[in-house]
Length: 268
Image: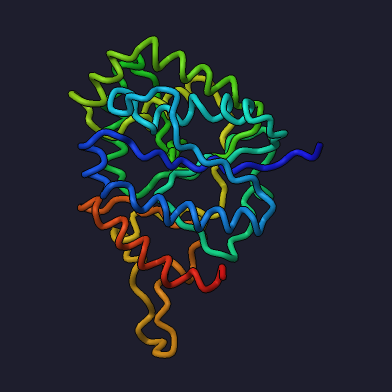
């Protein structure tokens, strides 16, 4: 049986009333799912919808954590003969003509992207967890985003290690996550463990595959001097768009819906 590359699409709609209200009832996930399904079909990639985490309490155990623990067990349970697995967040859209990123990601390396959208936030989060990791000499130049990773079977052991570390240190991690540091959920711990365990990370994926904080970097603008073309920069020059970093999470659905209305004709 031929091995398939898999897109593990994280589309969990939490039942927590606070989270549903915060994220606009997760309506944006329906748009993302439709877009990614079409792109996967075009590129002969297996689309795997992750909508039911192993821990039902997504307030105590955030989906951002659980995705790492569930990805390999769920795919292997489905009996898919997999090659590489891309784990990507459901707050994303992909341009129809985006080149197949699996063909760029090297075998045996964890492919990820540098996270440079808010350097103060990143620095504060790493500093905040430094005592937890016994003052480990963290290399900021190796810090990566957790929004989009590409794995192969060789990385299963690292995610198992991450899961064990999470449950063994749950109370301390939650204290840092919710009380002292309050900078995201999994990303800081994940990055520390990548470096502590010398995981070989490929960080040379082309930037157009991960455009984040579209408002912060003015990606919604267009070249007004080209009066015949008012296509926004992010659509013109980017491949995958992350709808993150907005002051109001409720804006996500409206912006993704507007984008989909603009690009869906290319899929149809």
